[in-house]
Image (cartoon, rainbow, N blue to C red; front, side, top):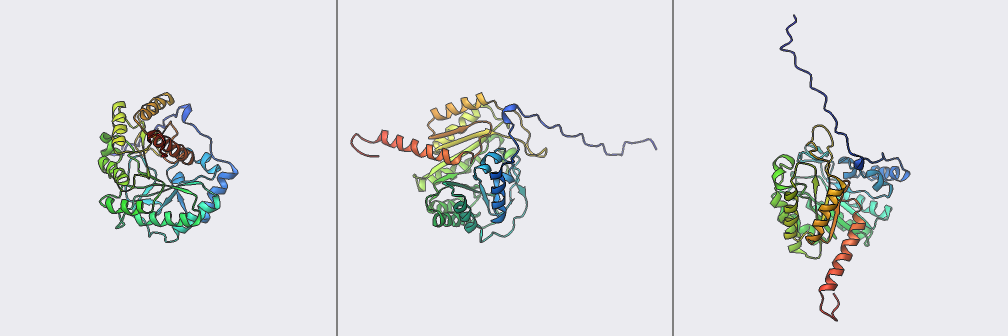
Length: 317
């Protein structure tokens, strides 16, 4: 009766990592946050801010800046860092493009960021929905600049990029997320060099479109690996690099190997600028769409200054 050898041993509770002071943010409570949240509900829109548990949601939503996540709230991939739910997505919402355009109009956004879940179940990976969203925003509020953050369109990349580039977003973002060595565990459904080729294809089709990519730090990457990613991005002519601290959404996700200090982020940023990126955002709380509008204006100014400097004397760039 006292033999307990066959009784399952209870799992030890997972110890939550204590975040350093530079990571902590206040819980969102402002009136603006509540208004943005209600507007999203009214328009039946999803946001990556909520789905990915972004630490900057309070600040951004107070200013009515939200990153819309189209094509539903369910992803066909299961990346080890991402908090978006995984499964078989539902039908694509035909009203979604018009609803996104209404959001841009109602909030008076000067710059809007559109991302999506992976939709490997769709013949075009969801590219046509990106095109429709861009077209609807252009009709509703022509002066709003549009930034898109797309998946890799696995096995459909060529046609997807051609269709989206033809719709002419102002910024095309696709995140590499981490260094190549960590892809099998952190981003198993993707391929590092395929993601680089996607951004190269954007530039090949339309060099005037700004390209952007980002990586997370704190997953176990080495310093020289990060430098190599920067070099690979510059070889692909990527204009804008974002670097932020990886934060573990739940105990089921990949663990944080290191909390990278603000000083280390500053050093990485200086190296990236020296390598020739037009714009660099590097800090623990940096995310792909954090301060995206301000960063876009600075990037555009940097390109104009670079072209002016390169132009022959007496010739306008």
